[in-house]
Image (cartoon, rainbow, N blue to C red; front, top):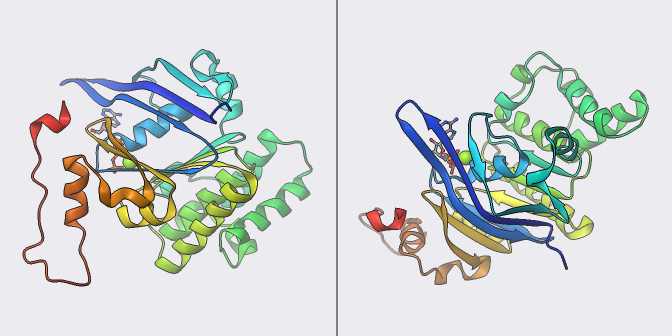
Length: 277
Ligand SMILES: Nc1ncnc2c1ncn2[C@@H]1O[C@H](COP(=O)(O)OP(=O)(O)OP(=O)(O)O)[C@@H](O)[C@H]1O
Ligand SMILES: [Mg+2]
């Protein structure tokens, strides 16, 4: 069976005044109809990997890959307009900073309705009903009111849920969720995870779940990629994270605080230059 997504040797670099920044340095993986977690420290290239798949990288960046396919579609040879048509409809990404990603001068309702009308033929009234239903599905309890608000008028957690609603409204086959629950309190977090989980189980969506939270990823995902300095240093079944072999992953695991047992002082990660080779 063709995987939903195949990424081979993906590289993303940015020319800057002080030289070339290599954000992603040869990432390869495949994704089926499953929940794939990506963990790794800040700056390890998680978001840039997601953005490159979505074609959301700034235009001055250089992107190369030996292969980047979505089902049978070769994304690398696709025109910008065809990729735009895929984005939001068949593949979507919940961006890490929802507040920066929403249009500040358009109400939340209009933004979601517009997303829907760009990709589907339906009446404005139907689009509004679908939008209100979707807002409710992401646990916004007064959708009629939130529909009329501007992004600066909602809280961080609500902005995150609005972004999630906007990305899910067209029912994508592939969803990249970049820290989708970082601004949510634990109960709402669980509800949002439950929505994502149902989409994977019931609709066969493929999910890439980017997070800093090792524990969350282990319990929520099927498989985990561990990134370090722009590369995947380890790939594991989520349930087997404790058997991680790479010293960086082992270091991360040993830094997790535990309820039982005394850990004084908490260990710190001793980085080695060779990890970044
Ligand atoms: N526009 C840009 N110009 C230059 N370098 C950039 C640009 N965008 C990102 N980078 C660099 O790319 C690297 C990877 O960034 P990325 O956002 O993918 O990290 P991340 O793993 O998502 O981190 P975080 O967990 O903090 O979100 C970083 O070193 C970052 O500084
Ligand atoms: Mg990021």
